[in-house]
Length: 163
Length: 163
DNA sequence: TTCAAATATGTTACATTATAACGTATGTTG
DNA sequence: CAACATACGTTATAATGTAACATATTTGAA
Ligand SMILES: [Zn+2]
Ligand SMILES: [Zn+2]
Ligand SMILES: [Zn+2]
Ligand SMILES: [Zn+2]
Image (tube, rainbow over all chains, first blue to last red; front, side, top):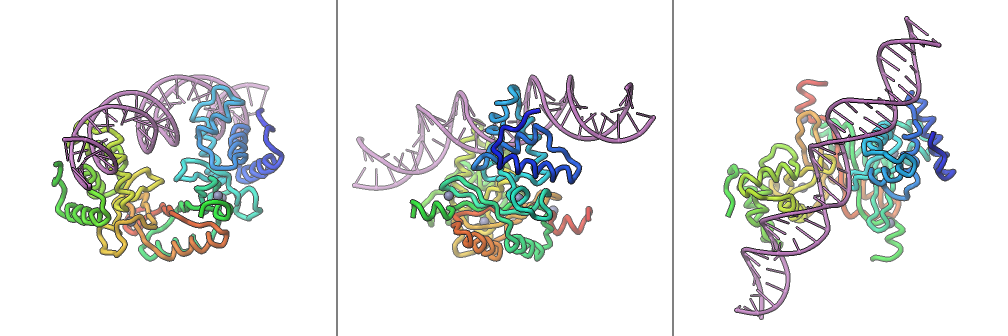
């Protein structure tokens, strides 16, 4: 058993994740828990190979498939998201911090990437989703999954220096 | 001079692209024209290394930087788009087929990726853009560039076989 | 309990996508 | 022509992601 090397807040979220998995009959194993913990503790999106480095603190010989398999699982469970523009991963705030009903399953979300500080904010805006559904229905396209990523400057970075 | 090995329709679009470049003081060189032609003639998004293979029909020793530099230029000019989820490129229908006023500069667009036939449709839907702007303004985020990609099934694929 | 099936992980090797760094050619301007 | 900027050639390597197969662990019966 690997384990409790994370901050208390992270452990709380990991426990929530574990319950979500149990609720759909999947298992948040030690390895998956550790990868999720590494994602959650990062202030910013983390790349797969950064996670691999993190893993290697515990498991010396870890290799890429180890981390990619854990990431695939966490994506399936809706516990993390991939930011395509960054080839990097973030924890799902919707699933782990809120107490939303349908948490723990993949869901549509939007991501705001600040080019100033690197932070990513997850939105769950129905207006955007509806606009997308509406526009696509007009041409007979049926959306199964959507990726919405906006790059720009967050409120903090706008207030502070540039501009 | 490399050159006129493309279908007539493609040449027409390439000529339009050349005029757009000239209009902003940039040059659609033979190499860039050829890469753009390869993108335009593909029925689907093309990867950089597929383009490289295409280039090598003419220029034997072409290497990755050759095609990536051309792609960077074409992206800057708004003549092509990158589909992040596919790491692949498509021609901008907005810039080359329509006769829109602001064609030839990067613009917000949305892409519908059909998992049935692989085709990608470019939308330029203001509703989606406005919903995004509206949602982000509420939290003080200023959008500079947005990526919207939806995966699903196109009308043709829906009508045909699988549900 | 004991075995078989399913699930999860270890391990090696490789595929795909993208860029750094530096040299050469070409074009533009005075 | 000289000086500069832009574009392209070339080599090497970085970064991201998978295929394939071996081993271990869990699960659920027999
Ligand atoms: Zn989420
Ligand atoms: Zn910021
Ligand atoms: Zn476009
Ligand atoms: Zn289709």
